[in-house]
Image: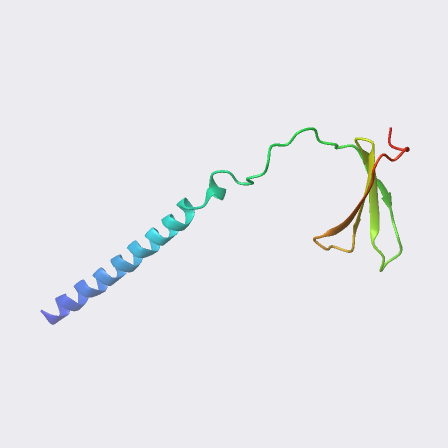
Length: 97
């Protein structure tokens, strides 16, 4: 009788842990709006996919890219593989027609 009780308790414990694990996964997945709409970004209008001019500097210095967008010149400088960039805009640049 004791042996049967031990076997039933082990099965009950395994079933309970499995059920709680499944419930936790379902709750985590179903509560996130990101699974329904992966980017949650604003709508995109016109995109400027034209080429940019690159300015390469020696090692240790940031490289710079520049391009015109709606009459404004935009400069972007990344340092190495950094996640962030420095941005500068020349409003109404006469070279941007």
